Image (cartoon, rainbow, N blue to C red; front, side, top):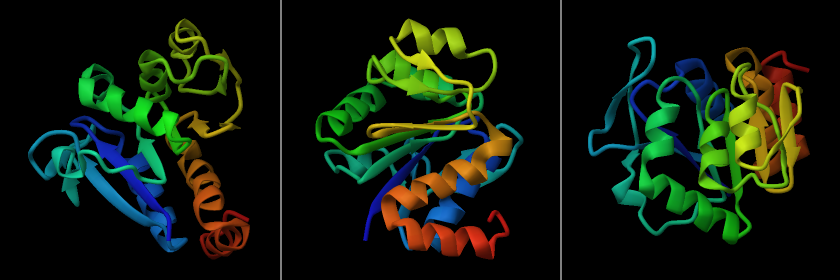
Length: 183
């Protein structure tokens, strides 16, 4: 069974984070919500409080099959956290999957892991992608090598299904997509 870590910083976009976790768990992917801070309760951008499974420190040194970053105002906290940058680079170096949606692809760009890759993001963040050496692609979901990026809340389901396909296989993703009326 694949393992995904979904990082939560205060101000995360709730639709993105919860859709991703829900779809991946339905597909049979072990999915852990990881709080950036030492508190397991994390408040999203719209005051929804989510209880994380682990703290960032508790998963120190662990490589998941995928790291997933939801967007929202919390993306800035992810980008400025030195541990996140180090972990993204470690996952990249190990050939593990890295995914981000909305504002969070800018976190990947700032960490220097998107250089030479195609990526998408929330409108207005395109230049931040380019500054990190990424090539902006205006699609809802972009998969390039070990990296997957998505545009924003309305595309969270499609983004999550693409991650389910990568981590659990085509059949599992189709089953979930059909059950949720995406396909």
